[in-house]
Image (cartoon, rainbow, N blue to C red; front, side, top):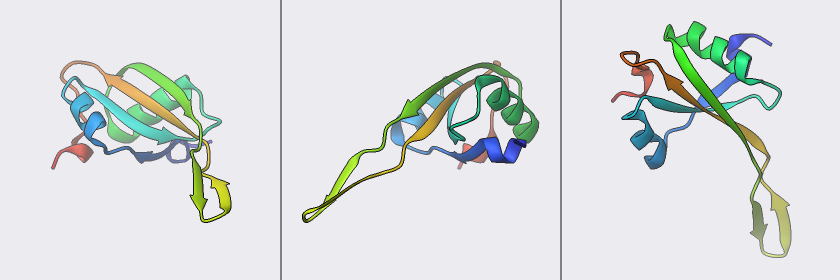
Length: 93
C-alpha cells in the first residue's frame, strides 16, 4: 500500500480545527493501515516530522429514509501529532 492509498482525506470540522492550534491534525485513513504506515505516509507526503499517531475505528451510523434502514460505512480515523515547529499548510486558509 503506497502513501497516497493510506491517507484518504483530511478531516475539517470545528473540533479538528481547534486541535490544529495544538499541532494535531485529523485524517481519514485506510482501515488496513497501521500506525507505522500512517506515520510514514504523513511524513513523506507533507514533509513534516510526526511525534505521535492515535487511531480509532469509527462505526457507521444508522440512517433511515422512511421505512428503509441502512448504515453508513465504517471507517478509520487518525489523529497525528507533529513535532513543535512543524505544520501542515494544507489546512491553513
